[in-house]
Amino acid sequence: KQLERPPWDSTFQFGQQWFDASDSDDRRVKRLDDRKLSASANLGYALNTEFGRFQAILGVDVLGRSDGILFTGIYSYPMSFGRTQVIPSVAVTYADANFNDYYYGISAKESARSGLAAYDAGTSVTPMLGLHVIHSFDEHWSVYGSSSLTILAKEAKDSPMVEDKVRFGVGAGVTYRF
Image (cartoon, rainbow, N blue to C red; front, top):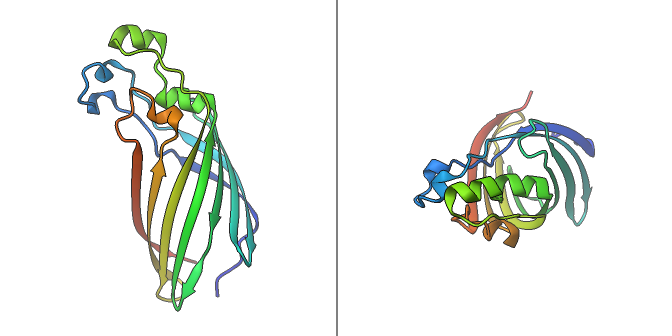
């Protein structure tokens, strides 16, 4: 039997975003500073209803890379098929100017060094679609797979640093519940 999770939770998460200038094919972009991976402290709330699951997550950069804040709203609709659960979701993430300027902005110093125009990314709202599938073998063991499609907000995709305007993500794993 699966335990009901409390509506509030807090998590610590290593970021999934970084920028290595040497990975670019553009000689000007290669002259930009790298953007390092960060970590966030998150506070979340979830509400399960007959219409689906509604979540809100507030994340704050705790390593001082961007000093940014992210706020994500997620709607998902879990469906069970025997031991398999399929969870489609849609989300939007608000990113403040500190977060966006660190990961997508180009400072005056970087502009002078690279020849790219300075760029102030400002705040943004980014949509995402996801699909998560979980198959339970018994009360302890399960496997999961997930995929996501993120369409970068104009504030991010207009940055000269950005090559891909759409991002795809995939993941898989094994879970053991105690």
